Structure formats: C-alpha cells, structure tokens
Image (cartoon, rainbow, N blue to C red; front, side, top):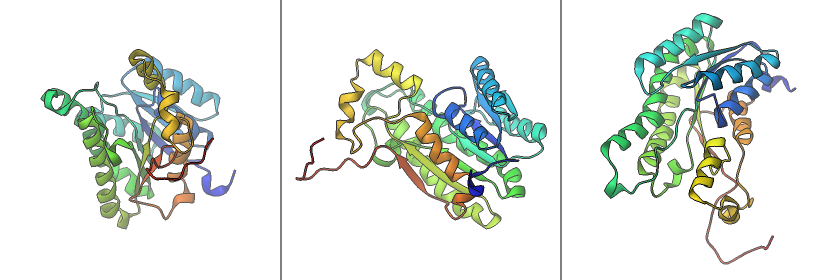
Length: 261
C-alpha cells in the first residue's frame, strides 16, 4: 500500500454504516488501517459490520443513534472519542428520501424529514466533531448526491437538502481550513445499494435500461463510492478541500455525435 493511502492509527466515524455506501466505506477504511465507529439505527446490522471489521484486524464499535437529533449525535461523537481516545475522520453518510411526491402535494412533514436526515444531521455531527478533528487536523466527507447537483423531480426535499449539504461542505471547508480540517463531498449517482435495488424491484424500474444515457452505460456500486471516500480522507488528498465530486458514470449531455456501443 502506498504510504499516503494508509489510515493506520486513525479513527473514523461513519454514519449510516449498517448497509449500502456506509457499510462499504466502513469496511474499506478498515482495510486501509482505520478503527471504525459504525453508526446507525439498526443494531443487528451495525454488529454485523463490526464483526467484519474485526475479521480485518481492526477495532470496531457499534453506536445506535438517530442522527436527525442533536443529543444522540453529540453522544455518538463523545462515545467515539472516549472509546478510542481520538477522532480523525467523520463520514456523514446517513441520508435518503422518504418516497416520491410532487412539490404541489408534498406534506410539510416529509420536507422536514428529508432536510433533517440529509442536511441537519451533517451539521450536527460536524459541529460535535470539530473540537476533536481540530486536535489532529482531521477531515470530513459528506455523502451528497447528483440530485444535489442537478435536481431530481419527485424528490425536491432530498435534492434541496443535498444541494445544501454541498454548500455546507464548501463553507465549512473555508471556515475550518485555517485550523487544518479538510471537508469534501462525494455525490453518488445511480448506485446499486440494497435499498436501491429493493426500490427498483418494487417500482418495476428497469435500472439497466435507464443507464443507457450514462457514458459508462451502467449503474455504480457502493464499493466504487467508498473508493473515493477513502482517497479523500487519506493524505493523498491533503490539498483537496471544499469540493463536491460526482461518482456517477459520467456526464449526461445532449448533442449530435453518437458512438455506438
């Protein structure tokens, strides 16, 4: 392993770590040498991830927390710092949309849930982690979405929250850069997580056909998103901060030139 990618001796908190991108990220950071605090709302899934982390020879800690609420988030960070004695990396991965509905029909409660889960949670966790990250010149990666870059009809609250998360990333990077904290965002596109696959099946959505407009002609996998996260939290990315980088199979553009598969 290149020295710049080695995370040995570091401690990472990963929210939404029980499944999908969070799980893939937690396991990859462990493979790179980090000890992991796996955070989520379903203890059995978190315990399973911790067991996988321990098989990799690293230490893991499962913490149940609803990251939409300030007190559980503060407790999450305090528990992590107390257990391991330090905190180097925060991955704000918890997120998602609560169903699809047009703006005209959107209940206020749905709007508030999506904003709380996708935006407020990252603010709470980042603020709580700040004193610990400052000590070690640590870093934060916020998991956004291409919906935050381009918008997606039917998930206005989710799109707005992810766009807000990207601006939060930019502003916090500017404010905290002088004390050595780097903050970046990763924006996945169509990614075949367990939850996404279940949703596609339930809705009768043909994901393979939908990807034909992507330059790479396929959807992504959680492990591919995790690779970018692992890069951004490593010393190999030591001069990168305030950026939002898509992992989405390429730009979807119009035009008059087509190269057949």
